[in-house]
Amino acid sequence: MSTDTTTATGLLRSQHEQVKAMFEQIDAAEDGQRADLFDCLRATLAVHETAEEIVVHPAARRTGDEGARVVEARLAEEANAKKALAELEKLTPAADGFGPKLLAFKQDVLRHAEAEETELFPLLEANCDADELAAMADKIRTAEKMAPTHPHPHGPDGAVGNMLVGPFVAMVDKVRDKLAS
Image (cartoon, rainbow, N blue to C red; front, top):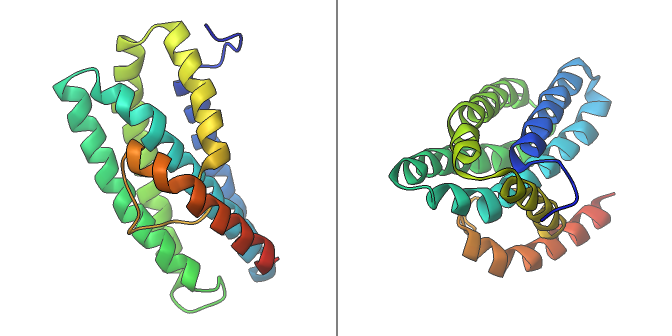
């Protein structure tokens, strides 16, 4: 039993709100600030999605056929988001095309978060007790510490692949981030 009362779904909802706020900050920022804000958003999303794939998706699949269907739909959205994020990462915020691509990406991310909150999270809340959801929150926090900070559209999508490859890719990403700063 976890001593923290935060549930996995509560933690993830809070992270969704943080992502929404990050998009608003990017929208309001000057070009010079947008690159740093986008880097923060990129890393946040990469870590968030990896943790979901490692912790949340396997738990949802265990709930049955509906859980598997919901997870497959979210994974398809995440695969598209990884590709879009990787494309955005190659551009600079001042580049032609960045704004429209960022807007389309933002809309996709917000739709994805809404789908998680209306389909995935209620499924977990109906099938997992409070202790399980609290333990999942702890596992999410642990997974986030090992997660890559850049999108890897050709990398693994599942829990096992992320656990095998994730720590190495995360280490490379963190070195890359340090060298870029």
